[in-house]
Length: 235
Image (cartoon, rainbow, N blue to C red; front, side, top):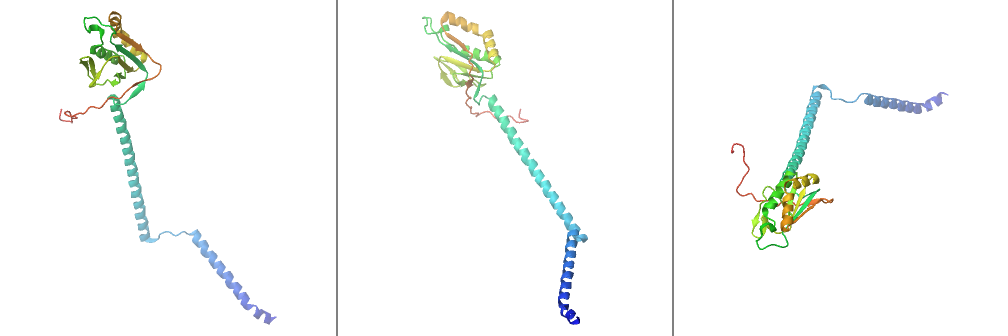
């Protein structure tokens, strides 16, 4: 019996060592899991504070960059919108919409007294344009020549000059706007006078109020050579 105990002693010792090692490892793992590692001591705390300040400064810089980018995008969008509005008001954008079309043409037959009231004069076109503006027209064109603040309308021999181009009859005037208002203004101010010329001298006077949209072309740009934008203090 005693011999058997001595014979099994090495196996017992090995089992004891394995159990002891397992318990030691379990305690080590439990300690590591339960107690995370943090900087300890004054140097570690200072390093942690420096790192926090660096991250805060980086976040502030990123926030400022984002704000600057947003302001830049908003400024670009505003400048683009203002440019489009300026071009629209200057007549440099083609427009389409509801409106009316007026056609004026010379008489087919004339008496020996000369041109007189048998032809369409530039004053008819100027007065017609003013009447349409007063009726709320938003855009006007004569023979596809956009009428703007720089448009000239005057007699040039057998032609009428508009925007530096020679135009001959028939003259087709297109005005965009409220059709009822344009028609009312036209009939109130000038239409009857043209009707009298039509009856007496045979000129053509036609008014169309189409259902389909009309188009007014964009005006050509004018070169500015002698004028410059006035600055503060120079007026």
